[in-house]
Image 1 (tube, rainbow, N blue to C red):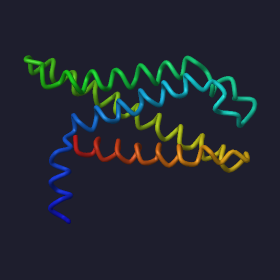
Image 2 (cartoon, one colour):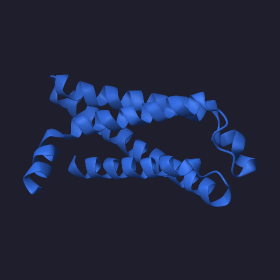
Image 3 (cartoon, rainbow, N blue to C red):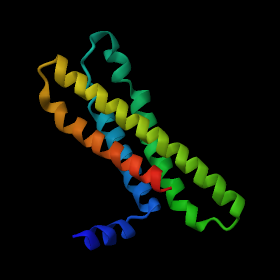
Image 4 (tube, helix red, strand yellow):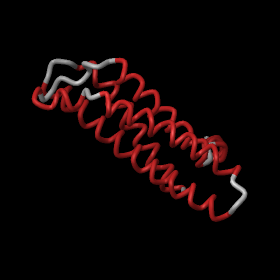
Length: 139
């Protein structure tokens, strides 16, 4: 079992993890863009939480994280490669912040409203946050 986990970990390098995280953030942004009435609590922040600008920001963040992770091995100049790696790590930190904020928002919806449909999404965001944390600690 331990050898199987180490084999799986060796196949999942930092670049592949960043591509998967970027794909998740991109999908989350597209899904929130499609569902413009997802967040309802607290009512005074409903228009901010369901803003199209935030959804487009998530889409842009996911796409940029995937693009930077994809381009790192193809950079010939060491200086450009280091700059791209730093930018990729900044996007990775932003993705972690986004996942944690979304998870906390969905948990508050599950606690304070009768909508428990957000529970599975909150768990997914927490799992992806853990994945971001492990990827950032390996980099």
